[in-house]
Length: 178
Image 1 (tube, helix red, strand yellow):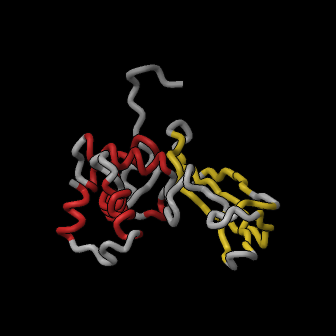
Image 2 (cartoon, one colour):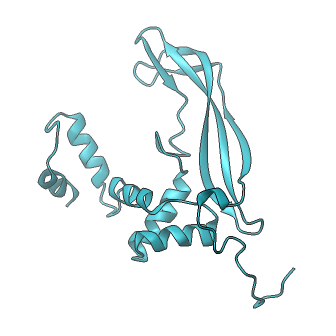
Image 3 (tube, one colour):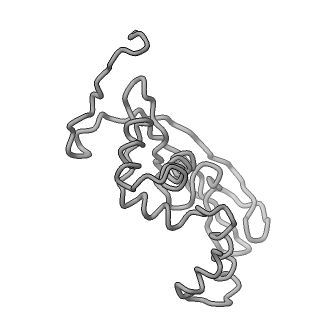
């Protein structure tokens, strides 16, 4: 074990492509239920099948490897609503996201609180937390996340859901954010 103050070079320094990064450590997690309540009507619904979802989480700096969590989730069918739905993973990651909420929070913190450019924030996420997030993805996360802390994303979603303005213009979104 190196003593404090001992220089340890970064093993990933000089890597040009994503393929050159060290292989991730895989963790298996399950949210597999026999029955689940329908989010629309509350009816108890049986499981139809299972699906896998891979999420990237903050890595382990000691091993130098990123962490991927493979979730096995159940898909249910509501016979009353005639809808299919997955088990809720919103406490772990946003729907459709490839990164956990911890990664998104850390990325937003680097860009908003520290004022880092996207490229620097991407490098810092890899250097400090061993999670590779392309800087273009950081731009997308920053634009779709509530960075001001005033519920702006929720206000935009509520306005769209209420069909006040089905296709909000940029000026309308600015008004909702402020």
